[in-house]
Length: 209
Image 1 (cartoon, one colour):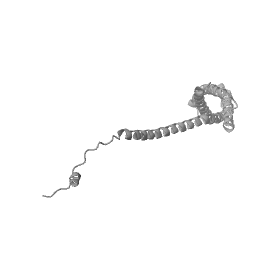
Image 2 (tube, rainbow, N blue to C red):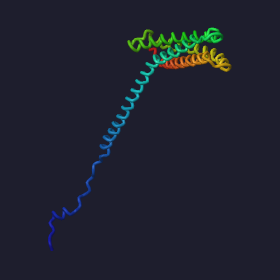
Image 3 (tube, rainbow, N blue to C red):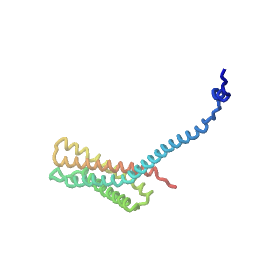
Image 4 (cartoon, rainbow, N blue to C red):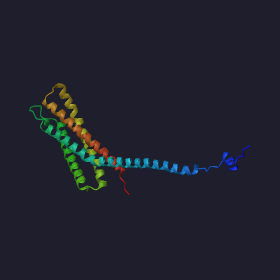
């Protein structure tokens, strides 16, 4: 009978179970940190996107008064020229109708006001300094835009009915020109109304501290 060496018998036996250390706590911390780091990266990107979007919105709001007032000045000027040149003899003279005289006066006022405001905002954007103090300037924009817009609407309300009555009887150069002038005055009103909305938004965000 062959004798089995003791060393070989010991090697043949399975090793006893060795208690494995619990790495869950150690592994959990790095995983949590990694997850937190990934979330922080995503959160940082969201913050940057929101800041960029805010800058773009503020830049658009800063430039919009110049664009809107320039548009209102252009539309009011076209309306002014159309009404003033609408003279074709006999009953086709604009100054025979108080509605058209009123439209002419308000178009001239809207043109002068809008041009002045456009020049003011152009100077502010070019030099970085508003000729009117910021608080007073925003209040001036908000109030004066509304006043001129309401005057344009009142002129439109006066000139539209008489033009519709004329066009129901006859359509000629005189009625076409007055209709075009009314359309231009309406576009000037829309531009100033939008400017008043922007001015009101800026005024609501203004801080006094």
